[in-house]
Length: 280
Ligand code: SF4
Image (cartoon, rainbow, N blue to C red; front, side, top):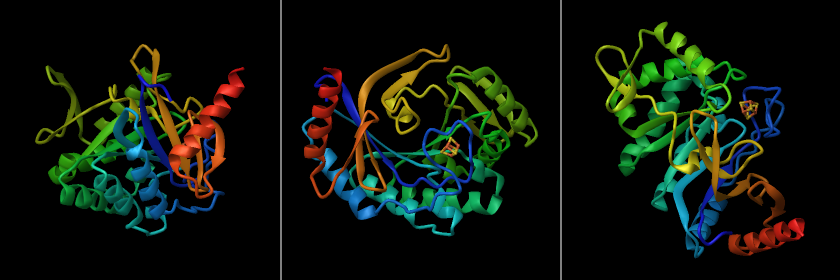
């Protein structure tokens, strides 16, 4: 890993997803079992990561598949437990989700309330990184999540929604979300503090150009840290360690190594060596 760039960590907790997108590069879909990542291992790897003598992002990405998978099978404890592990390390969780659960009011309430409870108990925020995408057709679902946050100030206090998926289709995606929002009584506005939505009573920020690089990790082929702006320019400036539910670790999406009981630091050294060999 570079001495000058920061390194982030992501956990791919499952390959199960409620969607079956043609463009999926995550080997995920409804045909996969949930087979959730073991939380004791997550805690171990996170503490090993924190002990590494490198510059780190303090945000931890949880991804899939669909990260909210356990809620779909009525396990309302897995994600809060994972969040507690991250809070215990004094880090910030970033849940990467397609947000389709916003279409199911009961499911949405379970997700938002249990996440708010654990965040509130710790007095810390959770980033909810929603992949806004024409393939996902999640504009109405995201609008309903916004609507729910406007109605629930406590949830809004602890959950920060960040919209992703805007690199290639920003204008149309935002137009679609804007249109979907208006159907739920939400008005968009903009002032000196940035863009926001309001129902005329409450107000919630629209965040789409997330400047902390970690929001961009854990997804797709370019599985590196980076940020991008609305002109679509991407700027890769960090390394990403990704660990999946099968106990495999990747560095910048190159080479998967089964950890096999080895400490994370040793695995990273092996992956760096492999990476150097590829370059020669
Ligand atoms: S929502 Fe994401 S993880 Fe799920 S199938 Fe679509 S691209 Fe893959």
